[in-house]
Image (cartoon, rainbow, N blue to C red; front, side, top):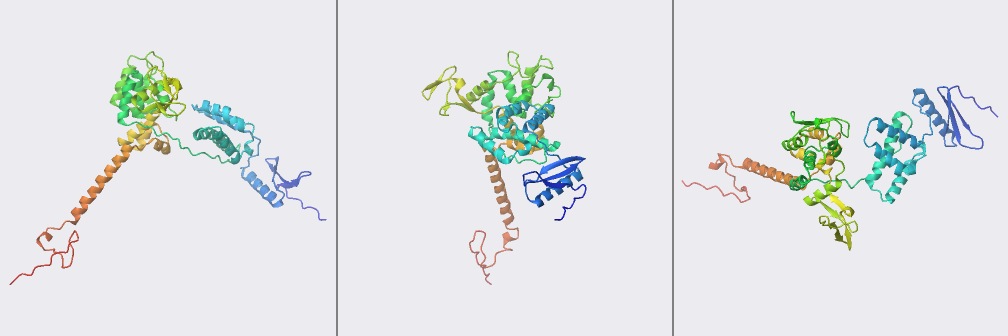
Length: 423
């Protein structure tokens, strides 16, 4: 029996453990022995894996296989949110604690597969979760994996499938609906009327308006400066006449560090969903629905509503209709319809990507009707130009360019034969 040929120094080795036919590879990385299973009994597969690992060690791209848990990766992601002062950190922590940790906790990141993620999707859908909710939860896992890949903790990225969302909101206000809504809001306080006007004009987010201070409104320069926003970038806009008049009435006699939007008792504006729903229903841009049959219900003031053989109070009914964030879509549509360029409109509304901005650029039926009228006018203009180009010239009017015998006229009638002059 020929003795086994000894491998050269630095080329690693292929071996088997006692009692197992699976081949393992051994090589050295910076003087430290590394062992890895080839998951195969074929020597060619093991040799191929060994050569790949030796190449990675040579060029410095080898990353040791570590037993990192997903919990650690999620913790790194949450710390990234905290360091960058992202406001959604609390939502990320809650989603991981309530839903994700039950399925992914204590799982090795190297063992994560797309099929496991698909199982989680099916489980959440069976529990009645919306597709958008599942996507927001999967986005956390996707961000944590990508962050670990960039930092070198993971060698490969796992494909995280996302669900198609069909519940994208497309709410917006027509001018008549906006007039009714502002009239109703004015009856509940100047702060609500000014809040709606500012959001409708510039597309500011509700959080940006709630945190706005008096010093950010410069009446001399006629500007509003947002020092902090969702994307972390400051913005400055020039006020319209109506916005300036309303904000001036709010901030007169106030200190620079006071909030701009406060209630009549001086408290900063917080949650006003109930008041907003009442205003929208009164303005005809929203409705209350029965929680049993989902039909719209007419609510009397301070009176229980009898529907489906039950007396429903206002707190038990479901509101469906315009939400405050829909004013942001109205602002984007208003800027584009006013002829503002897309880049300037994005700078005003605070959108960073074109794809997100275009989702807010809602095309209303009135816009499609206006487009049809513009198309009709353009077609009519083309017909007029065509008629002018086909009109006879000055010489043809006097018979100099008369049609030859057998030719047809403009509308298909045979041309009259030329007359012969008598001597």
